[in-house]
Length: 279
Image (cartoon, rainbow, N blue to C red):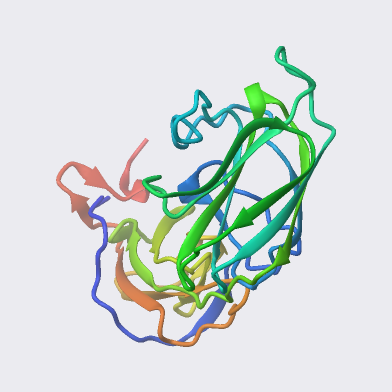
C-alpha cells in the first residue's frame, strides 16, 4: 500500500457529517505538557477541577520558575485567551500527598507561550490550601498557558476559579492538513487519518462519502469500512470545531482524496492488497 502522506489543497465537499467527540465539559481535563494544554475556549475558567497526574510528565520549562531550582515533575496544563489586562485566580489545593521535603503541595505558573520565553507568574513553593494567583499587564486576545505541578512529585486535588477579569470565547481554528495513506485497499479496515489543527480547534467534524464508515475522536479519523467504492477516488473533508462552536461553519474545512484500489492493483512495487496474497 502506498504510504505517501497527504497535504492536499482546500476543497469544498458535502455528504454525511461525522461528529468527532466534541462534548462541552464543565471540568475539562488538562494536558500533560504545554503543547497539549486543554484550551478553555468558552470563558469557562471557573470551577475547573482535577487531580495532578501520578505519572511523571517532565515536559515544561526547566527551571519551572525562572531563577529558581524548581523542575517539572507531574504537570497539568490549561490554556486560555485573556479577555482583560488583569485577571485574578484562586487555586484550592487539597489532599496533597506528602514528600520528603514536607506535607506536599503544588507549584503554579503562567507562561505567554510554549517557548517559555515570557513568564507571567510563577510560584515555586510547596503550596497547599488556597493560593491567589494575580496576573497583570496581560495582552487582550493573547493566549496564555497555566500550569500546576506537584512539588517533588506530590499529587494534589485542585480547583481553579477565575475571581476577577475574563477570558475570551475562542473561535475554532482550521484543519491545516491531514496525514494518512493516499491509497487504500478495498477491504482495508482500521485506516487512521490524523488532522493537524490550528489554534482554537480542538475537534474535527468529518464529512465522509456515501458508504464509508468511520469514527472521529479529537483530531483522529478511523475508517473501518470503505463500502462499495472499489476503483473510486473519494473525497473526505474535516472541519475544525471546539466546544464553543461545535457546528461547522465552512471556514475551517480541509479536504483530501483517497484512492480505493481494486484487488488486483499493485499499490507499490512488491506490495499487494491483502486479498491478493495467496496462502
